[in-house]
Image (cartoon, rainbow, N blue to C red; front, side, top):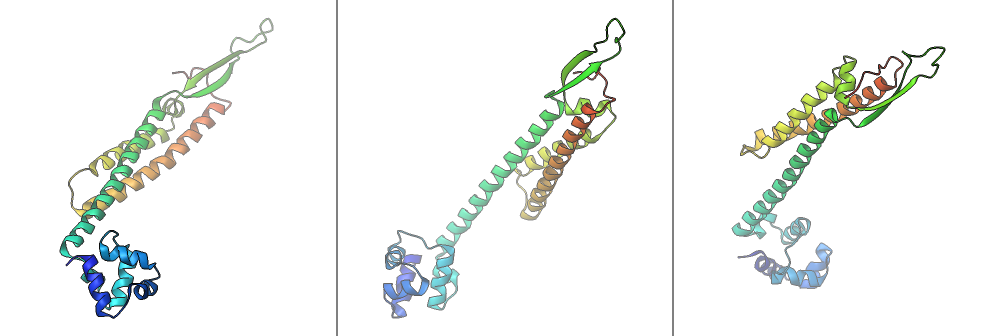
Length: 209
């Protein structure tokens, strides 16, 4: 017996009209009609309310096919969500890796090495530098740290697509989210370190890509 048939059956056994049942679960009579015709499937909340009114367990209202269908829909919804999150994590990690090596920040400096009485004006030097180049010039390993974290994040997110058991997959998903979060934090620290280095007085002009 399908859900719509069970709703009609239990309602009649309880001596309730559609309007009375609707008032007990705080919906319209039209919605009860749709439930009983099978054109609309109750929400989880309304399903529990119906079961309470009928004095039965919510799962007793569902047929075996409907239970399987709900489980499959829940699985597919969860799978799509984690697929989107995993792909997003991979893309973010790849962008972080690209930002680490691509010269995108313009620095400005002055060359005083040739300043003399005859030539008192220093040479204005500008160029572009990457996070990796800037931090390594000052022996700061922070960019290496976040590059490694980003690579680990890509690997963990890719493994999410594997056919794993629920518990290992749950641990893997949590781990990939934690690693991505840490890599984002370290990235902004690396960016701040690069800007600080380029704006420091001891920045050398030979910092070029």
